[in-house]
Length: 310
Image (tube, rainbow, N blue to C red):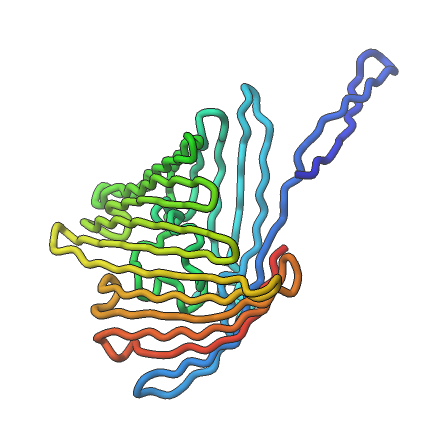
């Protein structure tokens, strides 16, 4: 993190000034631009061509040294719409993970709006995140970013990290939500368990188990999830993914999943490839197919895109 040095003139005596240097950490400005030209082939309906801005974003984040060995943290992140400049409400920007907090030897506390521990537990096994193949479209109904959240994350204990998020409903008529996860990382192995209650809706409980393993040029991932509403019979979903780096610049990706959570009889599979243009730039191609018992949602998606990170 870069720092800015400020010299302040402090009067020590009449006509005498003493220079004192104060270091302030410079905030980090960051962003991602991801756009894709996509062709949608709908079953028993016409085809559509569309340009998509896939969660392109701008943000600023930083930290502040506090007394007692503590560090203040902050972040403000906003989605921007490269394709048409707005999202359903004539807004150029939409709020994403935005929070303020404190961290130290005790762990980290943050408050604001951000992804739940349940959502974050998936890590990077969703290889088509932010595209049509994203697990939020067919596999899961609990990929939530919640406002009015107060979250605690423990320090790592031999690779084990616990996170608990209290979500204020700010209403007597609505219960507060709770999202929690327990994640373990050791080298290239990652496993996690996450649980939600009253987050996706009244009486909705959900549980998720995630595993990821990387060996050489291959990354494997798997997710299983179950959702129960008002104590009724639960519905399940699962997915598996694999990424293979076939050269220094090319990565092949594939994932498959089936779930009754979003749509009864839902099935989603995707294949794609990334070509690295630079350390923070890539171009990519993909194909996603979605099917369910409700044939009105059945479609195939073909796309080519470009991503820059800065």
